[in-house]
Image (tube, rainbow, N blue to C red; front, side):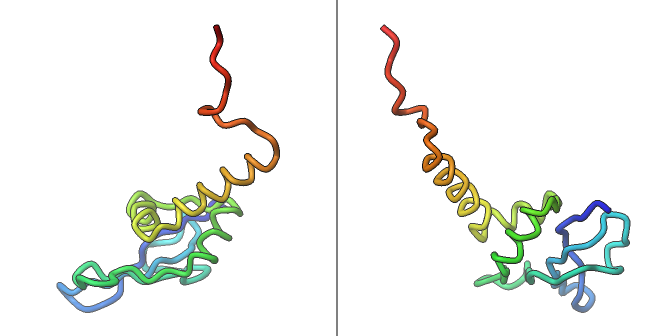
Amino acid sequence: MAVRIRLRRIGRKKAPVYRIVVADSKSPRDGKFIEIIGLYSPRQQENAITLDAERANYWLDNGAQASDTTRSLLRKAGVLKARHEQRLAAKLQKGAVPVSEKPAAE
């Protein structure tokens, strides 16, 4: 089963609100889903994204793929940057040498 993190539309006509859900890739846009992990209100100016970063990371760790729009929302919420920094810190603790600290070849 391919799992996707994507948007599910709720709200009234011409006033969209989207839930950020984890769903099977074959289910329809507003159909069955596994879990709600956030809310996106594009017409609201402040705090348009409400997201449970811990659950988003859990699903990304377990192989869920984010849709293009959801990936940009995760980026705006800072989830992907924090995820990248955690992975980088884990690599550095294992003993990998970062590119900037390698000695120059003479």
